Image (cartoon, rainbow, N blue to C red; front, top):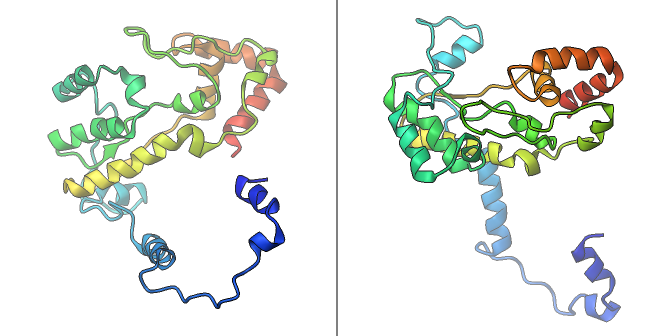
Length: 241
């Protein structure tokens, strides 16, 4: 029972009885009407950057005819960008730490589009945010790439994984980053769409049981051979909403 319902249930009948006088009609500027108007406006207002001026990437993705091949950089924010390196130094954050803050994600996503004449921004993120949302620790010690320090050792470790994931709770920062980026693209007149990426369940599975990109393929194949039912359970959890 919610707090509000619980409180109402404990009130006496006299306390919750309606007033004798007739209720006043809500004025045009009452908070209730204002909130209703704002909600209606938000529902009809198009999302930021809904129709970018440069839609070459969108048309190509739909299989429509385009006058040239659209270009974007998969590793857009990286060591080749002095502004990215300066931003990391200023914030004092490593790659994984930057991913936690929508404003950091937006800044790192937009930097290449400000410098280069590209046809899309690509979300500054990593495939392992999904693994993190499933209670898998992810680290970036520096010079070694991204690591999963405590991979799933066997079927008994499935208890570490949640049955379902509350996306808003675990990945709400990614959703907010997407909104922030699109607002910024529009505000800065960059005129390009925002694209993203994801990992196939196999890739995430290999990381979750193998620990790193260097050895996770062999570990993944071994896991599936030795624990077929547990492997199927992991894939079900990765692919079921």
